[in-house]
Image (cartoon, rainbow, N blue to C red; front, side, top):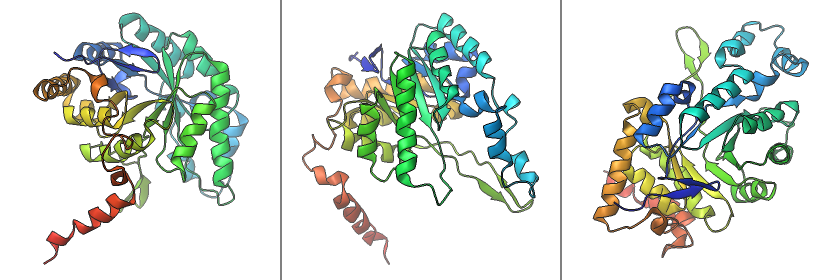
Length: 334
C-alpha cells in the first residue's frame, strides 16, 4: 500500500481524510465509528458565539432592534437552549471525546466579533483539543458597513484568539472576499496556521404556501469541489499555511484532486450523512487503489503537483479558463 500519511496544523495524520464539523461528533459512539472507519482526525461541531453570549444585553439588543412591530421575526432566531448544547456541556463532551479516541480532535468556534466570549478558545484548549478551527460567518446587510471595517473585524478576531491559545489555529474562510489572497496572507500574519476553504453558506428559501422564509439544507456534491480546488491551487506556494479543502469531497478522486491542488487534508461530512460513516472507508479504498494503479508511492509525492505554480499552463486558473469554458457551449447550439 502507498504511504497515505500527511501533516496538518503540525499534526501527524495517518491519511488526508478528516471528518469536518458536523452533528456526527455530538455522540461519543459516532466519533469512535469515524475513527474506526479511517478518519485521520475529527473536527468537533461548532460552539457558537451566540451560545456563549445569548443572555447578554448586547445580543438581546441586537435581536430586538427594529423588530418591535414584527414580533414574528423574533421566532425565526433559534432557541439557543435547544439549538445546541451549552458551552460548558460542549467542553465536557470535547474532554470525553479526547479520552475515547486516539486521532487528533479539533475544536470549532463559530463567531464574528472579539470580546469576552473568545475566552472559550482557551477553555477548548484546556479541554484537550489538539487544534482549533475558527469558523467566521457573517452576512453583512448594513449599507454603512464597509468591506474595510468588516475585514478588520475578522483580522482582530483571529489576532485576539491567537493571543489566547497556543494550539494551532485554522481559519475557515468564505469565498466571497474581494481580494481573497490578501485576506489569506493577513490571517496567516496574525497567527493562523491553516486555512480551510470554504465555508458552505446555506441559503433560505420561500414557502409559497405559508409565505414564510424557511431554512433550506442542501448537502454538497462533487461539483462543489471546484471552487475550493481552484483557490487552493492558486494560493499554494504563495501563502505559508496548511490548506484544508472542505466542500464536495465524496469519493477518492475528490481527495486526490485536493492533494494535487496543494491541500494537506480533505474534509467531508455530506457524504457521511448521505451514505453513512462507512462511506469514509470507501473513499480511502478508492484513494489507495488509484495510487497503486498510477504508481504513486505517497500522498506527499502528489501534494501541490497541480497547483498553479506547477502546471504547464498557469493561465488555466485565471480568466483564460472562463473564456475557454464559454466556448464549450458551442456544441449545444442548434
